[in-house]
Length: 283
Ligand code: PAF
Image (cartoon, rainbow, N blue to C red; front, top):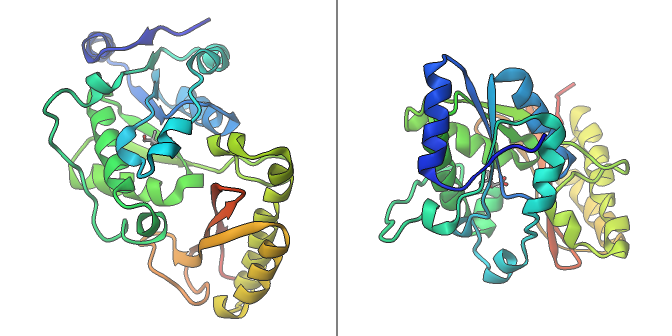
C-alpha cells in the first residue's frame, strides 16, 4: 500500500502528535531519494525497531558545494514511493526548499574537528549542511530512532556527535553497507557511472579488502599504498582524495590497525566521486 506523502511541517506535526498521544515510537530514515537496496535495508531495520516509520526525501542544497552536482543529483520521487510500498511505511516526508529553509533562515549547525578530515577536507561546508538538515529533520519528525548507513561512516559519526551535543533525544543507529554482487558499495551516485566505468568501479572494494587483510595482520598503511595506487590507476580510477586508516570512534589517523579501525577511501572514477569504508579488525 502506498504511504501518504506529506509535504508540510504542519501536516507532519499533526501526524506525529497523534502517534505520540497513542504512546507509539517513531523511526526516521533520512534520504535524498533515488532509493536503492541500501536505503531499503535501513527502512526494513526501522520497521523492525519503531512502531511508526517516516522516510524523508529532500535533496539538501546546503550540503552540495558544487552547483552542477546538485543539479545532476537524481530525483525520482514517484519511483521511490513505489519502492517503499512493500514496507508499509507510515509517511514519506517530502518537504520543499521553502519548508526546510524558509525566507530569512540564518542558522548553521556545525560539528567541529571530525569534519575537518576525510570528506570534510575535500567538500567545504558539506557536513555543516548535513548537520543542519539532519538536526531539523530530527526535530520536525520528533523521532526516537534514526537510521543511517555505515557507507557514509563519517556522516554517521558527525550526526551522532551533533545529536549528543544538542541533547536531541534520538538514538542514531548505524546499519551495514549494502553492496552490489561485485562488491561496489550501493550509492545513488552509481547511477551516474557509464557501463564501462561501472564495471571497473568494483576494483576499489577489491583493493580495500586486500589492504584490510594485510592491515589486520599487522602491516603498516605506508607499506601498502603504492601497490593500491597502482591497481586503482590500472583500473581507470583518477584522483584519490584519500585512502586512510582511522580509529572507528574518534576518526583519528592510524599508521597500523592497533585498535578497532576503518579503512576509508574516496576516489574519482570517470568524473564520479566514489566513497567506501571497511572495518579493519586488528588480529
Ligand atoms: O546521506 C544522505 O542521503 C544525506 O546526507 C542525508 C543524511 C539524507 C542528509 O541530507
